[in-house]
Amino acid sequence: MDFILPILNSLPGAAAQGLIWGIVAIGVHMTYRVLDIADLSIDGSIATGGAVCVMLIRAGANPWVAMLCAFLAGAAAGLITGLLHTKCGIPAILAGILTQLALYSVNLRILAAKSNQAISVDRYGLVVSQRYVHNVDLSNPLPLLVIIVAILIAVLYWFLGTERGCSLRATGANRNMAKAQGINTNSNIVLGLVISNGMVAFAGALLSQYQGSADVNMGRGAIVIGLAALTIGEVFFNKIFRNYALRLMGIVFGAVIYYIVLQIVLQFGLNTNDLKLFTAVVVAIFLMIPYLKGKWPKRAGKEARSA
Amino acid sequence: MLELNQIRKVFHPGTVNARTAIDGLDLKLEKGDYVTVIGGNGAGKSTLLNAIAGTFPLDAGTITLDGRNITGMPEYKRAAFLGRVFQDPMMGTAPTMMIEENLALAARRGKFRGLKWGISGKERAEYKKLLGTLELGLEERMSVKVSLLSGGQRQALTLLMASLKLPKLLLLDEHTAALDPVTAAKVLDITDRIVTENGLTTLMVTHNMRDAIAHGNRLIMMDAGRVVLDIAGEDKKKLTVPELMALFSKVSAADEANDKMLLT
Image 1: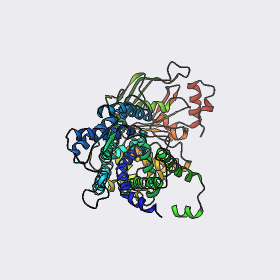
Image 2: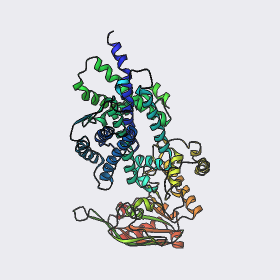
Image 3: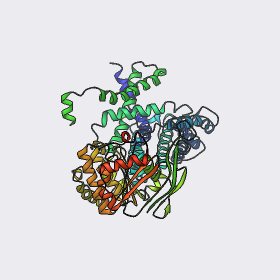
Image 4: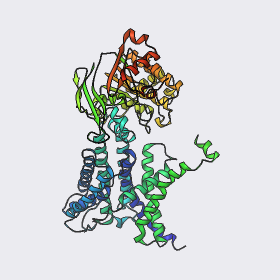
């Protein structure tokens, strides 16, 4: 039973990581679900967000200002992907990969040619820090993260209910219909990518402060972790939650679940080198579930319930 | 109202697959004209409607709608003046959105979409009344996702959406072809009612000769990307299916003409 305690001990950390990656997952939801585009640029924009935030704070900027700048930098990356896709006719996946690749060089420049730049919570007034995740006072990052996530969900929920937000959802649901209803689908795709990458970069800014450094590789596989959180959240919570804001919350729960499971398997001795493989397998399984469910004949009892 | 002047469209130009879909076509519609369009497969009927809607750029010619040259206008901007219903019932609506949301999207056609709430309570009441006129019971299911509707219900909803903000021109592209005969007849009834009540200028492509004769005040027949027959008024009212068939084989001069047309 000596593995229980370390697991319990790691829960607050897993929750904090889950909340931050939950923001990434909501960004992925924006492109992958709302717009029906798989945007791979976020692997780069999460590191861009972290890099911009860390370098600005080190230069003496207010952390909140640094986070806003990180959001804008990510939004700019989304703009590039969007323009490559809509104005230059490059398939969305390729446009995202191109931006992601280009961002690697850009991020190295932002990080002053180093692959890693540390930021100490002792010297700078960071918004969130891993060091205090076990504290039972206001320095604990969890309450603030919950508030930030709640605000983001509220803003996104409101936005997608506006005239512009509805037209964006229509763009993802049926491009032909959207155009026939006078919706500029291209500008909506760009807008969606801008919002998504801005959110992801903002999450990168939080993550870099939380772990005390920005790393040029911190975004590797971000899209897959985001998809893991998204699909776990959907599989577990879409049945329970009907309301869209609650479903967004379910996606964040998905991220938290993912990190808790991760802590558990690490506790059981998973080699950290195998983490990416583990993540890929988790995502593959959860992406498979809806498809396989559709292929298997439904049992009579289930049918009656869903009817 | 609508004036097409020598419009031309070649698909895959410069390749072995090059195909002239619209070949120097001229067409003029008066305000309130309800024109049915018939012709064999590949005659250019759908291409004609898509050309007007702006799905692709023309190779030559001009399109003037209500005195305004819209030839180079992008599809989403033209949509402000056009109502469209497609052959595929999946194409005209956003399946993951509610019935009322789809209507609200259509009500904002041609308007700036800002940060106001996407649908108002006043609108909901209005849509409820409008949906009631379809007599499909949709007024009781306004917050149901469109993906749960049948093909006929979707086409009826798309029709309502197309006419919600009265368009200068209504484009119907074989919008009953994918429906069973009973549903198709019902959707055509709704079409007639909406067109005549609002005096909409309409182009309706159909594969069904009887429908082409029974509906509208004017009938055009297309072949090889051109209008080969244009019958209006009393002449159209007296028209019969065999006469139309005979006219078709005469003007098209194609041996396999009869096979190409659907005899119904």
